[in-house]
Length: 450
Image (cartoon, rainbow, N blue to C red; front, side, top):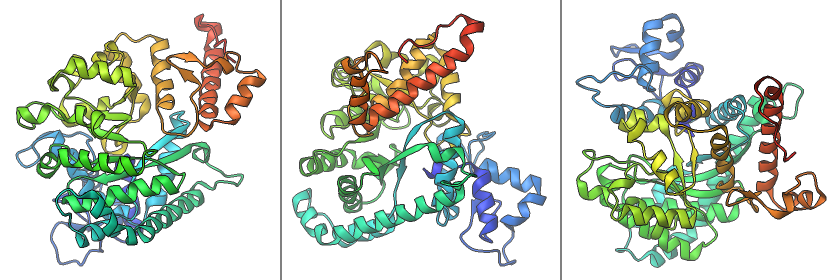
């Protein structure tokens, strides 16, 4: 979630906290200015120093990025921003959640799954305290199990505090309630993959358990640059960690960042199996990015398998452009669609990338010959393949039998048993309202479903 916040917000919060910024490195510091270090400035002074403020915004995001000798690629600049604004995230998880919900409402988004890592410090400590004995994950779980209730409790308490702060910021339940109060949120517990294996496993173990015990968490993901030396070295081991935990927590769903790689970024052998391993070994339900699909061994067979298993790919057009310089016909979006693999559009750190979901749809519509129906299907896929509980309104692109008439009692009964279906029906109502507004001028008929 931290990457979804715009730089201007982080700088505002840094000013409120009395924090200092280091102009040369473009970093928000965790302390106030001492007056003794050259190039440091109170964040509160940025509002009267436009040059310094713009320099910080550029450092904390992809805005106006131009490679230099010391900042050579969009990839490196993008991932460097997280350390630069990290200090401002510590006290403002709730402010961040409020901003994300308000922006989602402005973007007509009803439901979001946010990746968060509450309790990370405690999980790192637990992993450091209990090194792995090879890949004996049964023993690792036994060693961590006495700590698990407290670790999960920390995750839940930090999430409680974040949500309470967000409710206060949004004035939910009052006449001044923000539109963001109406956005439904669930969480994916995100694991940072660039730590030593025991720390990665501790994160995963607690993440799986919090999904089992807290309905706000609906899945697990793994993040950080996939081309990182540690991430590449331990990738196969990480997939086996998922495999071991799946046996203990078979109900936990996975959405894994895999294949966010290009030739040259890693050696050729690094492009051959990440997506396949995420699908076949880790049993991921969704793949994030999936850019290197054409370099996977037996890519055709893998695409067929993903289509048959309905493994949805989260397409991040702006992110893939600014980080990997993959866009247009070089992007596998059309390839996945031709192969029958379900896809949906996603923003992936919209604050860092300076965009929103509307921008992703605009990019798609101006790059490929998509029809209005195609665009609706992309939107529907976002909910169909979400991890929100309940049966889907849609089955292979067709409405379920009970909801052929969405006003029927049968459909109302179906929706009463499915949170997912209720959100999907709201989406169909929104389509109907939109189409109704423009039908008289454009000739487009309103949806017959509602």
